[in-house]
Length: 478
Image 1 (cartoon, rainbow, N blue to C red):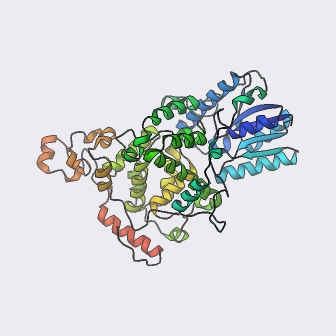
Image 2 (cartoon, rainbow, N blue to C red; image 1 turned 120 degrees about the horizontal axis):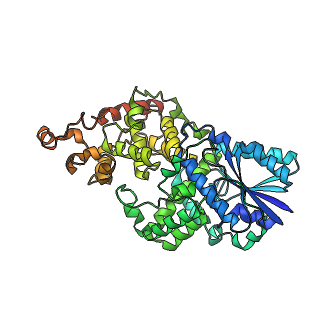
């Protein structure tokens, strides 16, 4: 093969890059492209979207890394369905290489690109890179997709060998990158977005940012199991956005988890396997992006009481752990994983709002938004998905708050209006005695909202909704 085109997408790195490795190995010379896809960007309402800024910085870093090796990254702005075949034709490339993506939109886009390339005598070659096992590589003994996580995890681990997570030796072949003058990088403004979004980023994008976070996490990974559920502690890796956009290789993360081992390494590896479980499910069942995996629960007529969704989205539900979580999301583009479950459960099972509205809101706000993980997580919390939290178990937001933020440190960080409320009442400030209110100069309903719903009554209504859709099942414990 004379010329290959490597199409970077959600894989913004050079190190341990499967598609780039195969392109460099197959062709005498390789050229590189990234497309700011208007089929995606035009759907974004927020012109200061942090994700676009994060990607833009990552693309800039990748472009600089290629230029340090004599090549460049051509950055286009348009519909990838048209831009990639047109560029391949203009350059006379033999094949376009890209990392396989498992989301329904990406599948349709890639099918369209492949068809246009094929009609022109060229090929789209998709390579596994985002996951250790993809599509049909981990199936049940009867050849069907797993629908429960634990047996999937056992099968996943049984198939795991060092060869599966060995790094691709890209560095040895980078001399096959086509020497070129540096290409232009359109500004965020030229893409239709505001540059102040760059100032809102709290993470350093790119391979360097991922490397720094990983190095920091390696020193904390042994305590991951004990600390990961407490939002006031520095427990998570904070690598989710970098992994989402491929600024770090999944193979490197699995290698590091294996090296650290113990409860911490095993628990973190389990989280990486959850990610692949959800990717596998969305690939096999793309309709679940909009429909409950347990189809019977699509029949639920969600009451969606006026103002409930807005109270949740605007962090004024009156439940501090929920409101603090939403302020973290709205202010930073990040939400701690335990809080994602609490916030999702509260929207669905306390406020009686369709889980899809919450999933779409997270899709707009999360810097690390991954459709498979987000849909899977929301369906789990709502009790409508595969391997879901049972519908009859309803998180008590006050108990969750007391358990996972016992001193109220996280709550006070994002709800400074509760700073003076004693620990005993910070999880439920409406219970603060009148005498204490007078001393503190704090009044529930004036200085912080009263609860928008009564949890016990909301839980009872939830059980009625789900029981009807579940065909009268009598499991009402929890």
